[in-house]
Amino acid sequence: MQTNTFFNNLKVIELASVLAGPAVGMFFAELGANVIKIENKTTSGDVTRSWKVPEEDLATNHSAYYCSVNWNKEVLFLDLQTPEDQLIVHEMIKEADVVISNFRRDSAEKMRMDYPFLKTLNPKLIYGQITGFGEDDDRVAFDVVLQAEAGFLFMTGEPNRAPVKMPVALIDLLAAHQLKEGILVALLHLYKTGEGSYISVSLFESAVASLANQATNWLMAGHIPQRMGTQHPNIAPYGDIFYTKDEKSIVLAIGTERQFQNLCKLLKINSDERFINNANRVKNRAALIELLQPAVLLFDRDALLQLFHEAGVPAAAIRTMPEVFEHPLAKAMILEERMPNGQQSRRVKTIVFK
Image (spheres, rainbow, N blue to C red):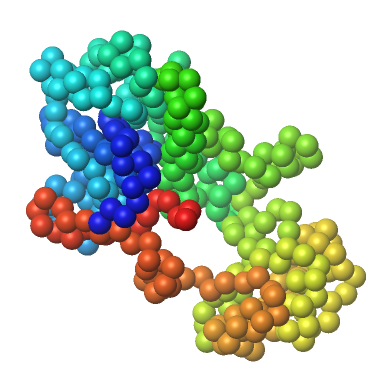
């Protein structure tokens, strides 16, 4: 059920498929916009309709993956290779505010869905384009390709083991956030000047922009990030995993000296010069873990986490997906929608600001 009407006069035409572009469309749908998703009828629609986990019904024409970013949209199945269906979309675009596309330039031009043509139909149009490696590179760019090309894959995983892909297509989502921001700026520009805009976002640049401290560790210190599992290259103990008496796992995230002192006091351990400050703890991480693990083993997980909370020590249980959705905040983020076959679909909100 749509509850936010902030953009209820906004019309968005979504010409994008897979994850990044549809995530942008769903962002505006959640804010009340009328989002019309155009899917290719010659290929049975968005390719993610068939990306199903083993537990899903193979007979349905939508996967849980597809549902994750396609809430509250009007879906039209068209063949944009035909002049008739092109005309249908062109008529909609004349009255639209935003177009979201991940077509390659040559494909968009061939179907007359490129910005230079569409702005002749609607000069105030805001056209948001997603590419893999920029507009002059037509390489196919799925998320794991970008995780590899932008350095994420190399530094993700355990030491001395193969690289590990992040379990969410995070590069797609980062690019989606970049395009949302660009479109919002373009809407402000439209409001001020009456002019439309063309915004182009690449997955590669979005990924590199998100390297944050890992990039500056290289750019400023010449440090090449290595696979460290959940550990942090700059802080210890941060991301280090420990096991409790009831055979459950927790992760520590100690970011200040006070927090480390409180940790030692709570666990009743005596620190020494090897751990006197964060720099020393990073150098002596292995010895630090050997010191902390026996102390953690004296506690059950939930009791220890409560003590950590009371002492201001950042820590968390490592939760499964069912456990995540036991949390009231997570439960409140679930959006439901009845699919054309009558199935009740569920996904989480993509916006959480209030």
